[in-house]
Length: 200
Ligand code: GAR
Image (cartoon, rainbow, N blue to C red):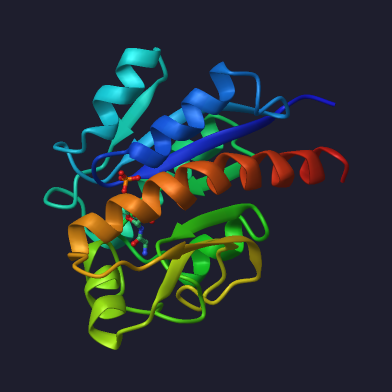
């Protein structure tokens, strides 16, 4: 059976994309191939990372495409590349129910907290870490989950806890959650899902 063809959807810095690319280069993603990077912003640094690695990238900029037109264009690009797994890596658009249905069981996301805490609409990027600090919890982390039509509500694939420290700012906490959890568990979870999809 052929390897699972992966598209990574990003909006910003793309450090999770980088972790996935590095895992592939290190031989830790044997059942998947990253064949497409999609960004919803011309400014996404993730595009630079894709270019460096020689991976085709497509941009459907938020300022140019409406949400519906963007989704249609992304779906067309995914179809063209025969994508078997859609990986959301800091993709800041909530996908419509129709989009999710088109790739049911084949879309995964990483969220920078221990779901079901600190998830849902409006909980993305630094906002999540601000909410964690405001709540005063001592442990946070990251969650990889399947994407369903319920925002941040799909079945959990992997989680890793990270300590909240005295004096943390949203930025220091974000960095620790990325370094100690996200960049580790996301490539591992993607390999796990690819292996499972290959067996189906
Ligand atoms: C990551 O921390 C990711 O978990 C988060 O955005 C950041 C993207 O960073 N995603 C969400 O908040 C989704 N709700 P990156 O572009 O460097 O990978």
